[in-house]
Image (cartoon, rainbow, N blue to C red; front, side, top):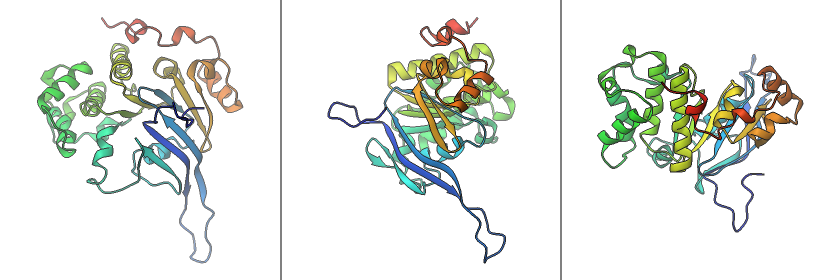
Length: 287
């Protein structure tokens, strides 16, 4: 079990305890209340510095709702979230500035998150300014672009001039420039060709090993989990039904739902060759 308290255990970077979230549909008539539906039930999650955690589940399992709670965009109906021991809950932009510096988000749809009126340079600079990040912003922007493998000529481009893969890398660079302690990434490899996937996978690996950055990676594609994550959580009907080391989970899934997911993804075989024991570039060589 992750996050067990003891005198010697490190303090988790982020901890969620007993989260519940209910959906209250509008009533068809004022005298007839409709039954609330539980979207998340009794979620416990502890994330240590440098951990790479996969979160998988079918559509409707509760992944997006959990992500919104971890981002403090919505509040839980019960339970609590703490980051480095501080309570996390929805609040004003100013009140959450400390949390936004520590926890960043890579969206699944970069086109929806990038202002079409802004250049790539301004898009990456914006959160640095809004969150009052100290230091040389130009250096951070250049470094972030280098790390995701985009030429600096793109700094003057606007989102409309970018391909889907380039826009995805700008969204990643925007988050990476802040040097967060935790990255929540929703389908971060979608829209990327194989060589660029390799570069992004290597970036995540470097940030985890060298910088101590933790990751929660949400994906419908279970095949990416062995390559990206040391630990995988399976969310089903609003509950975490498995939370185990990735290799063990895919080689011997315990829950019937997990077995079905693994089988559907054609991963019900020895996955040791897929584990990130070697750099990602060895899996997808970059020309």
